[in-house]
Length: 128
Image 1 (cartoon, rainbow, N blue to C red):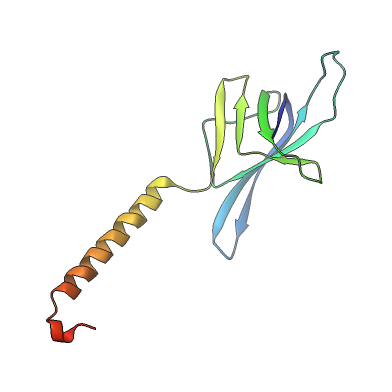
Image 2 (cartoon, rainbow, N blue to C red):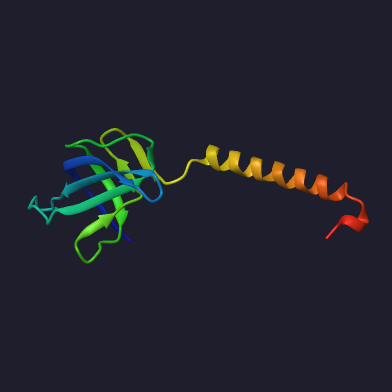
């Protein structure tokens, strides 16, 4: 993966919704303005972060950030983690909520335990 560092410009947060999964996705589109060692401008890099929610902070126009990612054929760099060097924070894109996953796991375990208790309490001639 290539590391990019530069100043954020054209920051545009938006949301996308899916009818099929009934889920909202947060999308951050922005560009990085970069400069070489001789102070000449380098080509801008288009970046995008997509997630259910972002953790650790935010970015704004004018912030100096560092990110790592692979550039697609269309020139877009899809990013999961951004270091905001202006504020000293690390922003991570999250696509799941651990507490909801934990609740589902506990409910499944309780259902399995109840099914086992019911099945174990049956006489042996009624079991499958």
